[in-house]
Image (cartoon, rainbow, N blue to C red; front, side, top):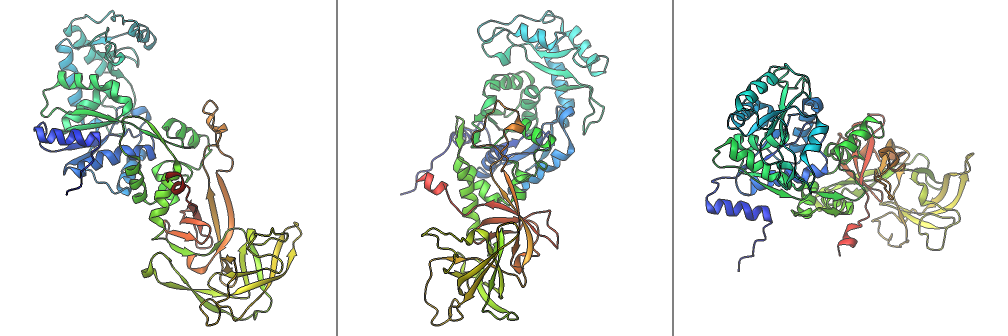
Amino acid sequence: MAEERILNFIEEKVESDLASGRVRSVVTRFPPEPNGYLHVGHAKAFCIDFGIAEKYGGVCNLRFDDTNPSKEDTEYVNAIQEDIRWLGFHWARLTYASDFFDQMYACAEKLILNGDAYVCSLTPEEMRLYRGTLTEKGTPSPRRDTSPEENLALFRRMKAGEFADGAYVLRAKIDMDSPNMNMRDPVIYRILHARHHRTGDKWCIYPMYDFAHPLEDAFEGVTHSLCSLEFEDHRPLYDWVIAHCGPFDPAPQQTEFARFNLTRTLMSKRYLRALVEKGVVDGWDDPRMPTLTAMRRRGYPPEAIREFMTRVGVAKSVSTVDYAMLEFCVREWLKPRATRLMCVADPIRLVLTNYPADKRETVKLENNGDDETAGVRDVTFSRELYIEREDFMIDAPSKYFRLKPGGEVRLKGAYIVKCTGWHVGEDGRVDEVYAEYDPTSLSGMEGAARKVKGTLHWVSAADAVPCRIRLYDFLLKADDDDTLDITERVNPDSLTVKNGFIERAGGALPVGTRLQFIRNGYFCVDKDSTEELPVFNRIVGLKDTWAKISK
């Protein structure tokens, strides 16, 4: 018996449109405004836009909504393209709203000549008063009933640059009594003397998003305009523009889906921009940021982000998703793929007093215990090693199974050692631990089967590579208060930097290489690395909280 397919509401509509013949093929689009970097919330939108096109054998266009030149930049255009490619999507056409400025202007003149648009001189404050409220009807503009000829002449003078910013706007003539505020004669063009990053100084009037967006869809042949839920109230205006500027075959139709929120995560360009501009973070790609460029730098695999979006799903109401689910997807992708190395993040020296000072030997460790084909590597073992500071305690509790006075542990892949003493430095902290090794206890050696409860990772001082380790936590405080200034909402412990040592194999890896540091988590080689000092960003810890939450 065939397994029943479960469709979300967008897929149901697409299949219905194809079956009814309303559309012959599927065309979608992803239309970002190039005024900032994409964040993980945007990834949901373009996973839907591109994913629907892929599923139904259609195409998806990438279109930049560059109708507001004062906030847009080529830097963002390039970054957005990189993000989309990184997540594995490919657009059919690369377009800009500005590609259609001439056609949009022609549509505006058509509306004026048909008596469906007029030039208005109300100030923004007056316009708000005239628009009315949700319980009170609007008041018509004094210029609402001027003749098409007079409006056309004035609109052309706006285009010619005869007026200052804000002197006039062009408004659609719809219904000042409509219960939908978006339909109360919305502004569709405004004067803006700003140089455009593509068209230069050709235009000093620019279309508003609610006018430009449906027309761009129509000009491109988009069949399904998939938008986030805040545009649901704008859909009647979308349909009005299509109906009054057409005919278009097929006419594009808008369908809305809900955004999602992530716990302890900011997903607002305005706030993210403030963090960058105030120097709270080190740019848009700071690994604490929720931008895709930051997640790429931190080491998140694109496949894991796509899997996360699949798990979030497509809904009609806004939901809040636990960040642990995203970390689970990242961890599940990394676990069978990341090479496992030993790195000591907060080192103290361990001296094996009965091990020959000039002796070096090689032990073999698995590159990945979850992948038999990953092979093994040679790791140097010597008299002096580095272990984690937290792996030694003088006054240890009874169930402390790491190194302690008189206690035994196994050094991973090597020998069992017994603590015989320690040294306290001038700062009052232990800086050296002394132990004796059992030469009959080498892992894998015949007769070396005796067991101890603790196993520690280590790095040989003989070929240890100094490294810098960045440990990340949430950017927002646990008790976040969104009424505070953004700088007051930042978690002061969102970044901890440590200087440690990694085994030789981790010393010269390409930027972006993902690794598992045994017992410490998954890490990625950062772009700040040098030959002398590799820098590693923690991608995610080893502890899986989502698996427990989701059961």
